[in-house]
Image (cartoon, rainbow, N blue to C red; front, side, top):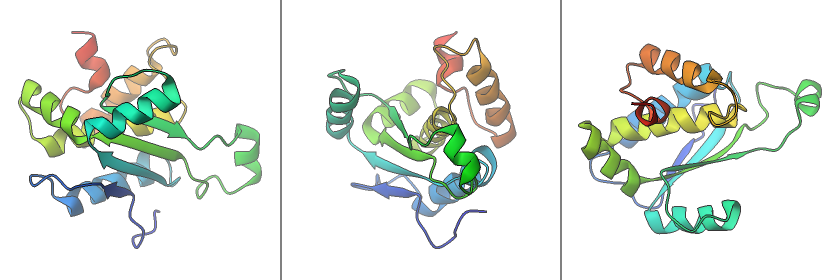
Length: 159
């Protein structure tokens, strides 16, 4: 179980419509269930910062909604260490992209942030919807149903 005293999410500026405690509770749920107790952290920032990170780490000079940065631990090292405590990695989410996507899909910013958190955590667990023959899409659909979330990024792309 994740440490209730440590924050998984940090904001550069908290959007007024986001209930920080609810989003943090959702992140803890993802940590406990999706990442099987492996902690992650998430920065919620603006388009400018996501564009900078996207350019610096992926060589793509545009803002994006979510970026995933796995911890880089090899599967072999995870077995030797404590797999439930090793950090899974980090996420960065643009609240501006999330707000635009929320408006486009008819739900709240907080709902979109949850969708992006789930998507990013699945990437941190090693899934990649571009190369895994639908494994991540199926996992995202199962988790979205279980967590009561609207269509996620992969489902939207295949409409």
